[in-house]
Length: 516
Image (cartoon, rainbow, N blue to C red; front, side, top):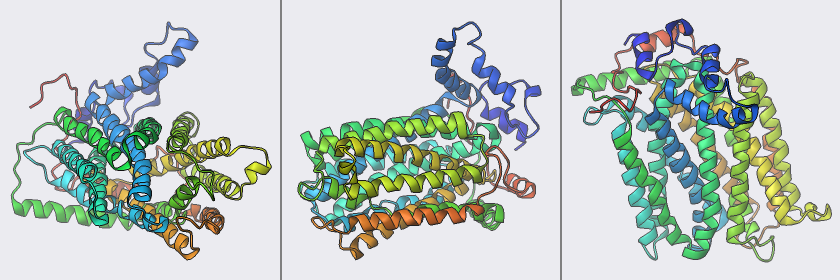
């Protein structure tokens, strides 16, 4: 498909051609005019208050309202709210209902990442296997149905075997993963076609995710206390059901081309060869390796700390409501991290930004160590105040560290297989997170951190922090390029953009137009 025609389909209200570069990168003057077109007569204070709305209006006018709605529902509700709510409620479910050891729960958390690890499979399905002529919409509906059923089963299943409960919870995470792959394919395409919007799109994703997490964490403790951990898991069916609604609202043109089986097999083969050739390039595998190692080497101590937080003898014995409130403060701090990135850091080179972010990440981990050793009491800082401070700092730094990694991933995706390749990169990220969870579980087990014995928990946290510091030596793998730069070789982009992969089905145009 011609590049100009493709970009025209991706834009709801086309900008004047003179304002676009040959590769359809949005000119900064265009962004400025769109963001300020309605503020010329407003007061400075009102102008500041209107900026977020004008920013959303700019994204909707350049892309599509249904696409922006999809980001809100997937990243805000399905991932943000469900992920945070799920984290707290499932922790109490394993601790109080199933009575599982923290090291075992860490292994279960690793299993949650299985649907994320096979994201390339979902990516291939959404890129190459349309259903009823639609490429994205059916997979939103599939994700919503799977998540709704899984959440209902675990909530109404009564006394369940551990295997059945684990399978149901994995079903919930699978629903989130499928929806994530589907919307991320659209995000990757728009980030490629209008490269200067890549940081903006990740800012929107990060903001929606953080706000959703804020709501999820704020309500999780309340529902656990009043409904019980198992029954509270049933509320996860609501955001998953909204994915079904998104599947019917999301605008997508219906393809009239029906591929034969041989043609489908050929497309799969072409996509696999293109992915193999792309990942072998040093411009791609080096930053991908860094992202994996930075996640894997920061081993997770989440469950050990959670059990200690809520222990009435060894720990500070935080209540169910307070645990949710602490995480809610962290989600609010994540919003601050998104704003800091968007306003200050999105124009920094990748290498410099990730080095500083990793350094701050290692330093913020020392706050956990101070809390484990109860040095905060020596300093005269109460437990409840210190843990809120620690959560806010770590969440802000974590978001600043994560967002450039995602932007970097979108810039490594070639056109034609962007959904599948972005899913592959996110799969590698999930492998890093799984390695972190399982590595943490193994270390917790080695140092005999159990439901009642937390003697060596501080040592596990110290090992985690030292590994974070060691990751700084790997930042050389990240390209020293600006975040809006094209990181792929031109020959690779040209080759993949002209592959015989059917690429006509998704058109992000105005919802006001009649859909099929």
